[in-house]
Amino acid sequence: MEFDLHLHKTFESPQGIFTLDVQLQTQAQRLVIFGESGSGKTISLQAIAGLITPDAGHIRIGQHLLFDHAQRLNVKPQQRGFAYVAQDYALFPHLNVQQNIAFGLQESWRNPSKKQTSPEVEQWLARMELTSVAQHYPHQLSGGQKQRTALARALITRPKALLLDEPFAALDTALKHRMREELLQLHASFDVPLVLISHDERDVELFGDEVLHLQQGKRVQA
Image 1 (cartoon, rainbow, N blue to C red):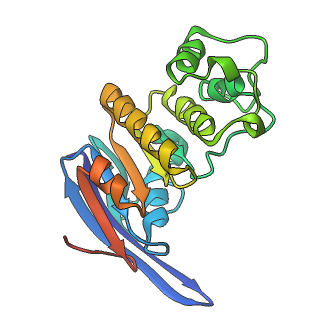
Image 2 (image 1 turned 30 degrees about the horizontal axis):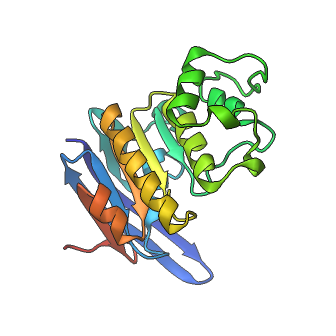
Image 3 (image 1 turned 45 degrees about the vertical axis):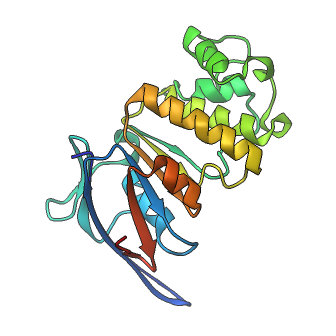
């Protein structure tokens, strides 16, 4: 079973009470969490990543049990071995492209050297067509270059799963098409579970081997 999820989480705010309550079991390796803004997509992804703790339920991906409320098991985010790419890519503005990618290999919060690199970083720069901008900083990059840098930083860690938060939302139509094709090719070569959240039906068509369609915190059956 690639994904075995039961997520239950209640939030209270001045606007009212929101409850996420979804269950999913699938052998599919690519899961799209689909829905409009406020449907619970990001909460679900953050729960899988370990950034928020469900009130009840369990999370199992592949052979790894990551959360089980009944067993009082909750693996820390840094121990889950997942790569999480935020919608804004979360690149370090004071580090160049080469350093941002190399940061994925760091065992501490020290900044990677500007002068020294590694064969693995060089391979990812070439693979993502970023060699020519290796010394550029995030503010000097196009949207596509930022995304490829973020993906390279994530994938260089050889993650157990890749979690993507609206990865194409900030791109124009032509670049969306290219980056979708690139991600499909990358995922085919890595053989790791992929969770992608989106409100775009095209992402569902391309990546949705299994679709978790949410409305107001609940699963909508197709």
